[in-house]
Image (cartoon, rainbow, N blue to C red):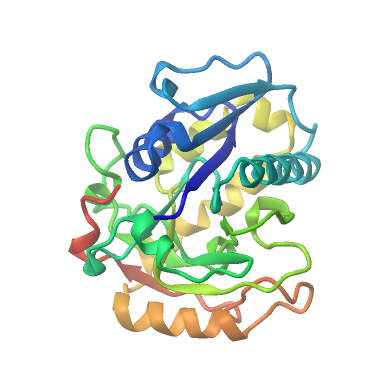
Length: 278
């Protein structure tokens, strides 16, 4: 079995970090999780016990600068993990969970250990929303996938999240600088950052994010809720296969090493077999 580390950087995000630690801790072992708190003023929560945690000086003063510096920092930390003998390093935001299709009957490390990864591997991105009128506010006492059933197939979240050697991530883990990407079959990145209208409103009230210019970014992301509420949900298997093919071949004109879907907005309903994963 390959030795796998997972890392993330957070600020004022205990809600998502708790889920991140629980999931990746169960999959990889908490001793293989590396969490960097953005700001020495941050409190390290008790649920991080058993992981590697570190508080660092606050990174950047606005959205663009913050993300560029954050990913440079995390790329250096990933390189350290490889020097320590890790075979793979997973990098995600705290609101992102990488899962294997349960139909395979494999854990995440079992799946990844069977893959031949030359430089990086990308799960297919699924951006979860809240279907208003059907799905109530999210809670932590039940699995997320018991409570959310609809996602937008989003090339923005088909990220180069898994590295097999030291490389430099671009902003948001969206690409690896100087390298193409490979989208894995039966592997998904579930993005939960904008899957609850109440939590989006709460993020507007976060003084740090307002100060760094996140208001427009957060408002833009709320469109996922509008899409999953208004659009007919498509068949998961058919449309994820199509999306994987399209994102493997289509590129935006400004970035040859990022996936694209020609502005298609495809909403799918997540199969019941996923409901207890996260």
